[in-house]
Image (cartoon, rainbow, N blue to C red; front, side):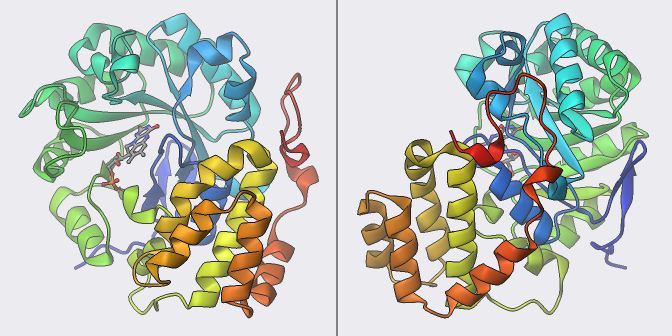
Amino acid sequence: MAPDLRESWLIGPVEVPTRVVLAPMAGVSVQAFRRQGRRYGAGLVCSEMVSCAGIEHRNERTLYYLRVVADEHPLAIQIFGSDPAAMAEAARMVEAAGADIVDMNFGCPVKKVTKTGAGAHLLEDAELACRITDAVASSVSVPVTVKMRRGVENGSRACLELGPRLVEAGAAALTLHPRSSKQMYTGYADHTLTAELVELVDVPVIASGDVTSRAKAQAVLEATGAEAVMVGRGAQGNPWALREILDSDSAEPSREEVAAELIVFIRETVRELGERRASGFLKKFYGWYLGHGRFPKPFKNELVQLSSTEEVVTRLLAAAPAAAELVERLEAELPDPDDEILLEGMPISIYGGG
Ligand SMILES: Cc1cc2nc3c(=O)[nH]c(=O)nc-3n(C[C@H](O)[C@H](O)[C@H](O)COP(=O)(O)O)c2cc1C
């Protein structure tokens, strides 16, 4: 029987309401993305990777990543680093910020990260990976999870040796993206390794990689015995992919729905990052939202040329006037800004822009 994607499951004591997890993605997983993912049925959302050194030095930009709002829960905040004590301190900050789970990145293939001993480097340094996991798990009371790749080299099976050791050191769940870090995003995610990992550990395993449809999600869950699937690129500018994965009878969004979600996303992101940063950050989302044959390509090119996000919103409303009413409805459902947890010493409130 096909697994029920709407079934809840547990990471430690944290109840995750569906078997679909929204992937952490640097440059993508802003708060607006995570909240939207929750609205479309993701049972768990995750921040992008946050530098533990940035947290340790109270770097203003880094601390922005630790802002949590009421409708994100359950939420994991992901940290990366190579120093067990600094990671433990960062984890305490993450817990204080209101995250339900501390996730650790043991899979980032980017050289800037691996050369510091963090990310995918830890796949080849099991001893350090376990010391970090132990230090972090001992320093917080929320569950600590690890996201990893299969290994560094192509064909590596390092994750199968490391996974059980991480669980012994305190990991309450493991996410596996079974590509090597050398592969980056080429080839395909070999979920036969996910199935092997599931057999080796007694904590939930989340399968990440190439899950873009309901059929793929069910096939991966069935073939691997994983507790949940994680969706990354498939959900970029496309929350409807989450809905399609979760519901057998979901429909393609109308143009008005697409325009309305994009407008809310733009406004939320401007509130989060400030107009200057948001206008550059958002450009890649225009193509993601408006693609899939939803709007003609020249329209996207036109939006990218506009200099302010307000002009983009005006242009979207002109192209899909009925979106205005949907925007109003969506914005009315957003939680009260007072529900937000702010860490003492945070630079500004999320609703204060920046
Ligand atoms: C733009 C981008 C940024 C990413 N950033 C992170 C990150 O910060 N932390 C992490 O653990 N994985 C990161 N990943 C990996 C994804 O979480 C996921 O494992 C990978 O994309 C495979 O899943 P997919 O095929 O559903 O995209 C990133 C992927 C992309 C495409």
